[in-house]
Length: 251
Ligand SMILES: [Zn+2]
Image 1 (cartoon, protein in one colour):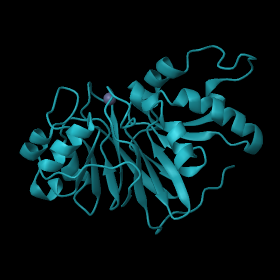
Image 2 (cartoon, helix red, strand yellow; image 1 turned 45 degrees about the vertical axis):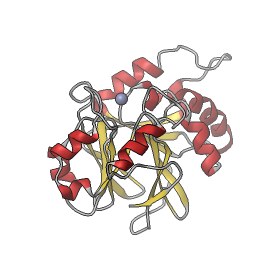
Image 3 (cartoon, rainbow, N blue to C red; image 1 turned 90 degrees about the horizontal axis):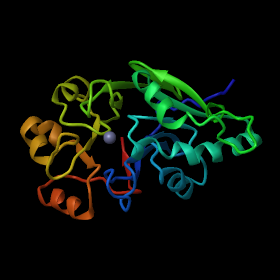
Image 4 (cartoon, rainbow, N blue to C red; image 1 turned 180 degrees about the vertical axis):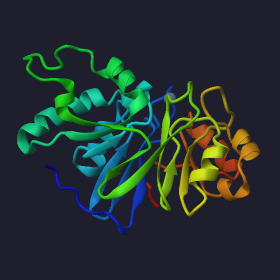
């Protein structure tokens, strides 16, 4: 049995490994790490570049991952992570905790787990390196309860956000979700939100957030998943706050 340290009452930070959209990699795949003074304890999303970025930043593999949805810029890093985790397990014997909203477990299976033999020598399954935890309304990790909620991205119950009450709410990829923020972000939660200067059928635009969110929510937004440095400058010019890779945001 894995013993997890109690993080209740600890000072928490959210730090981005990548802030970019799906069409470019220079800003990194959108992904963030929840950490405290003793180090990282949960990764949110795992694009192709994220395992490498996590090891460079923290010198270790993630111990736990929450997956918001199965677009490749959010899950394709699970393949390189499988190899690192599997060979790491030969030393410490622990799989990586993988929290996945239950409606998207079949999609994750289709996209990442159908190769019959991920190792050339055989004898190993993809799931041997991960401990899958299907999630409905939320989950426990380090004695903290994380709420999980559907957002608006491509289809109903296709993408999900995550919230730690009174600490933070992370939307994942989404269109504006004022009804969700009204329910889950009216305490002191810092809000990390999908945004680029102009919206589209898949993602939020700053013009749309200004139209749909109250001043109270707009003042708590830190924006990510923008397409370029130019996008970030445009958002900053509009008075928005954009996420910066490596900065530790107190939450
Ligand atoms: Zn997406």
